[in-house]
Length: 103
Image (cartoon, rainbow, N blue to C red; front, side, top):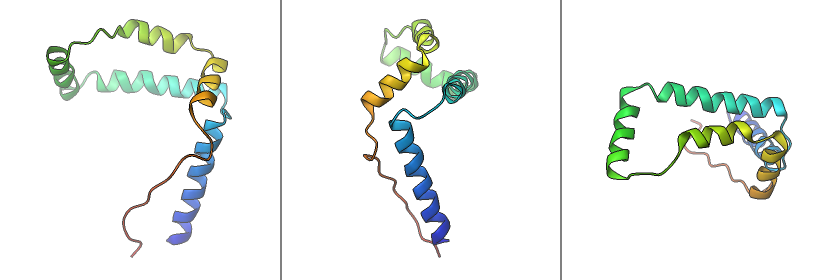
């Protein structure tokens, strides 16, 4: 349905532009943090994830300190993240692509 597709496109653009302008709540930021924690815990327990991680560690050694990474994620304040988003993303600069047919 072209109307549904058009509405979905409009709502997606609105959401992206509001986020880029820093218009998100502290509660939404906490949901994102929880999502990050949970996705890592979920993916971190699968065989395929562990196999890829082990292969990458052997072939491309990294000095990434994951404990420091998670401390940083936890330590960033709502204002820190809002400032980072506003300085890194530009409202109105997004594009949404659609593929396929409506028939």
